[in-house]
Image (cartoon, rainbow, N blue to C red):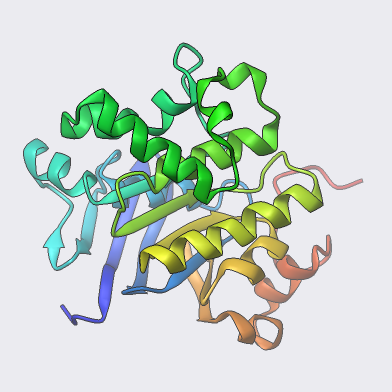
Length: 258
């Protein structure tokens, strides 16, 4: 595997019974770059992400992270690999029973057995990186707005200084201004860490801001990929329809048309 590729997927397939979700995914994620996967609901974005993480096991093909095969790896190997990953979940996915700083440091305490005092110091520093004061660390997630919860989720994603950060619909549920704030923070945090980033989204404003490269998935296949600045001149009718949000075009929606 080329040293320039952090993640390499070849002919990855995944089905759930008779429903084929991934139909031969091929994707290269260069080291230190931000790659954004765009596509509509049900296109296979989330399943692809879960296969990379090892949460789901692909039926066939190859997924390599740092040259190591993910498909079929042992539980201990998966746990070791996950230590190098950060994840911003859709909806932030914070634990209601924990304070904000305990949420941010959860992986440090539970995954790395770090002393609580040391973990809290790191959590407070990461909260500062995403523009939140130390007083926020003592609050519960229920006391935060949606935008603040996303910031806390981002702080948790970068808490262990990961090599790869995954973003699952990072701006879903946010107003356009707060979405732009989160996009700016994502760009800054990824750059500061020198990390590789993989994001899935249907938000083109977000994709344009955070991506070095964009790939589009449709019916379980990557149908186009290129530099982010090339997406408007992709020459692909599916991409053109999607990025401009047009109802008419080659992308078939699973709805009854009037």
